[in-house]
Image 1: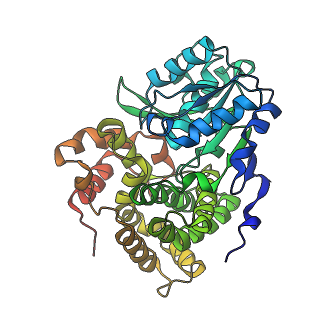
Image 2: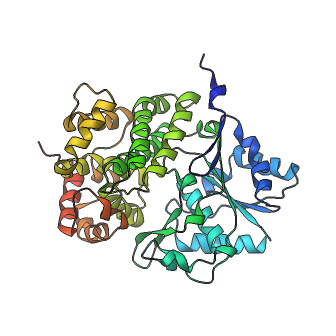
Image 3: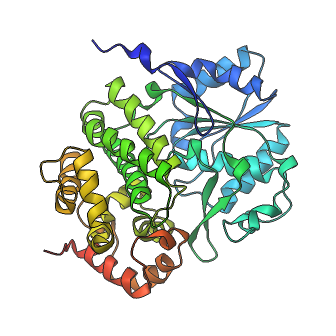
Length: 392
């Protein structure tokens, strides 16, 4: 039997992470260490009714930390979710945020903690130029993050993704202080994830690591993190999908997710740029959409990443140590864990392309794609992914 005690560790990389099976018991202590006396737990409606949330709130209450609950969050958060959360924070006299859940809850919790001290619109803090300098840092609330999926890695990120309903663009809200001060990362909290969600969020983690590794900037530290993150995913994601109670697989996937979010400070690419309009307009699952478009983007980028993916194949010990070996491995992984092959399977239709392509072309993540992408390229990529047409 695997000795799971080796998974009980504390890291400070890039923030303080209390990692290990059963570490949710540290939640109250983590809140107190940040000076919280009345935290607000921010989660999504699906999680809000589960025993893990009631147990966490009860434990905090017993520890002398009366804890409120805010649950009005969409799968792809919009501004109203954040403003409603700020109103709940102020009405309850709260002094800190527990961001508890998957990417939507984590992003919303961080954004609420940012906005409780601001008097501007949240979109005035979009990750553009020096807009982060507009933030009143003194007004921000401290955050403890508790991830319950292994996909976005938002628990170690310095930003939140919020959909602007005025133009249906997903916008990245950024400030370095948005990174949670403490992460309580307990793999046991992910054991209830259904297999199809485990697969979708796992592909999100893979897309973060893979796009970071391929991004067109110099960042060897991020490359090293991304390589190991991908190794963990290829080894453990199929096992986590097959048996959701496999705590070793769940632990490795939770780490791989955090590694992806750490690595993508280097940059992302067209996978995310194509995915964002789909989820902003059609509410598709972000990780699942990334998984669907992944091979089409790799094929498009081949001229710029062929040598890099051959090195990845060697590191992962693929029999075919080439670009083609990685592409084939992606296709096989998707098939094995039930990821659809075409965007049309997610409801994306040819008539969406004229609207989505310009949105994808101006998405912030497009700028670090290894091959420059213009609107016409996004049209080509969408057409291929909707039809399920890979070159060769």
